[in-house]
Image (cartoon, rainbow, N blue to C red):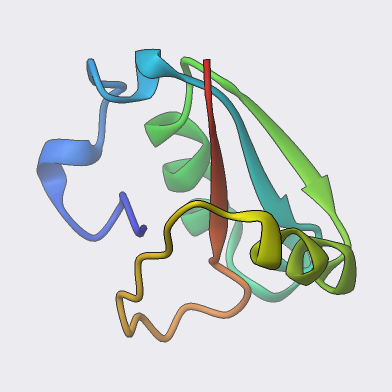
Length: 84
């Protein structure tokens, strides 16, 4: 799920208030511009973002209830959402 691509997601919404945590790869912050990292952080302001290695993040995928494939090309921008 890629929030910053659309201006309607530039501010926290009712959807993000239903989420407890966001898990993202630490590499996202290393391989993308500070402006993009800030846009992602703003869109997820109502929940905690937990950064971990990309390898560790991938290990969470088999336990996911659902997956959304966006086809986005932003490096390491995968997000795992945990409901509140």
